[in-house]
Image (cartoon, rainbow, N blue to C red; front, side, top):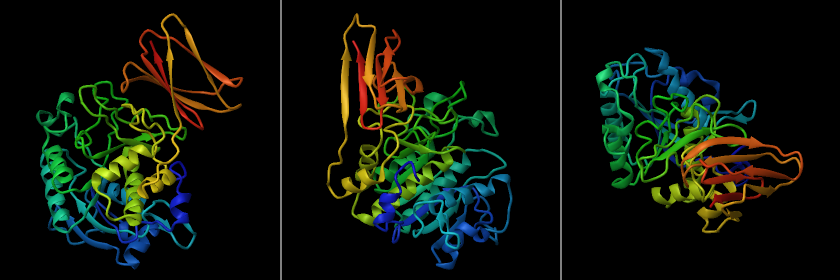
Length: 377
């Protein structure tokens, strides 16, 4: 929350009040006994629940069936968690309303979970829910290997869950925030899982404190005609806990202006982010900024300082001037969107030198004050 500039939301009293969020996840075991979720139950902010894995379950929050039944509770905490007694918060949308759906079983992975997800989306659509958080994704590793996907099927239109998400955003106008996936370190996969592959959803990757991609965070596939992930933010424990931060962020924007469409929300998120307009397949447009997003919500163009430098053929390096002691993040790319490597640099003096690399066509440098795109001619 510090990374996205929560102070700007707090100053305006933005906390998701009046906004309803649908959470589609694994179980919510113990949510009603979790101190940082106490306000939801004291204020009756949980408006409804459904269990598509075990519809006959009697105690929605008290019966634990798998190890994953804590997952939805953790996600809910990252959206709305708050400890009133000790005066701290874990999520941005501390005053939002919620519908909760359990669609994912922790003891096996099978295609039927996508059907559960689609049914939950239909239920939430029937209730008029506009904002959905789903920290779920399907790729390989299904209990029946024959059901596992191939990387080339992460195309935004093949899986059932992708087709359902596409209907939700394109036909129903819903805002669907999805975790990008945690396969970034898996050389046999690496790319986003479904439904994060859908063009209209807001796929969220994970960064470290500097704004670099966390190793585990899934990247966007090269074969897509659009960029994934869309945005990213800090999460030490998976993209499952990055997506809820962005969902809370969106809830604050909808509180400020309920008339914003899903396309407008997506554009505001991207345009307020740290890399804009130089998106890449590691962290998308980067980390959104609350103040810039508020300005965009009010039709005020935020101050975005960018620079493009062309390094002519024959010149072996580029020098970038910096403030003394400043740490910068560098993305080395083989195309405008595809990252080869990332690094953080802290120069000894007031500049850094970038050396020409035959594999690098463009380099993005994020400083404290501007985003610099270096094009190697």
